[in-house]
Image: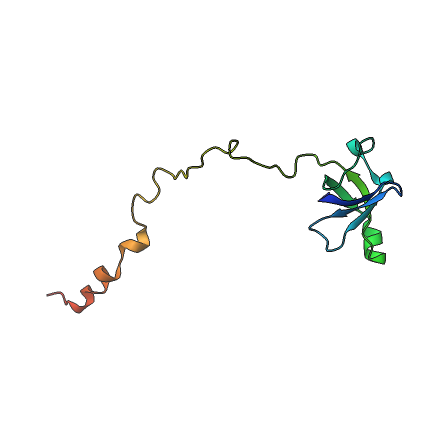
Amino acid sequence: MRVGHIIKLIPDRKFGFIKTDHFRDDVFFHFSALRGGLQGRFLEENQEVEFEINEILRLDEQKLEATIVQTPARPLSKSLDEKSIPEIQALHHPRARQRKPIWREKTATSELAKPDETPE
């Protein structure tokens, strides 16, 4: 199911349009495509919905029409205020970076300076 929000409703003609990030154009829907909790409810603009596209119509005639429109199974967006957000503190693993990585132990100063010296 794709996700979007209703941008325009025309209740006297019983259709509307959905805006989604999946398509550049708006998706048409008729009130007969409403399922679940939307059948008896009053629809409003900016309401979040889940919908399915008629793929045959989309491929053949290049038209976007929703066959099923329903309320989302979970909330899609939630506004947070400062009181509901706990203070965020970065916690690192206790043993993180306690020792140098192995590839750093062999540095240029320890290995490149010694070849000039010849063993006796």
